[in-house]
Image (cartoon, rainbow, N blue to C red):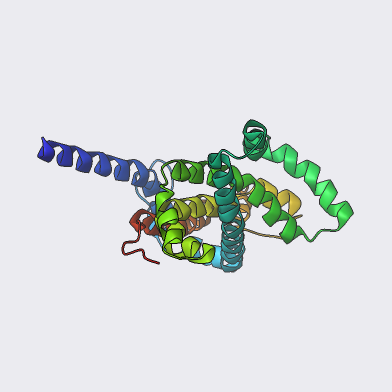
Length: 262
């Protein structure tokens, strides 16, 4: 029975890998195709024209902008979601349903409408557009981090904290040496989701950024709006997938730290 479960688990994992990788095959082919006329199954001419065009159009700068947005959003939304989840699971909030509704409201509001409304407010208050973009995207990411951390806190045993405090550990020591290590997998998963919100955003960055913040999605969309840009769009799209894949691999390897002590 154990062997059959292991075999089934491997089959499911292989199927999931294929499910993810198969759609990337045409993108991979287009990224290195200088000429691929219809109805040929494979490109007639291979090359790096798409890569060169992407680099010439400012791809490195766009990747820096997207990475900065993703990291900034993760740095804000992850601790905010953890604190919100801790409060929701503590049972001490007087009106938890109302607080929960406020926290998860960004999932209901259309991003396009919110961005259009806040764009006017940002212009009138003269808030720097990069700061406004990070703030709005952080609010949009908090529901995801809150939900994930709420699940983690629901299974969290506070007895470890109580034991550490009994042994004389301070609040800071309990946080650093006990709570964070035990919640490391959930925190890394929440940070990954928050990073994706900033990395993949198009609407908020375009509207509130006022076109001055050229991220990877904006650069890809600008080429996709034209004709004859399939190779550069594919090259940029393929490169945009690599950082999240690396982060996903790191998150998958994250696990509870052993040897926690005070």
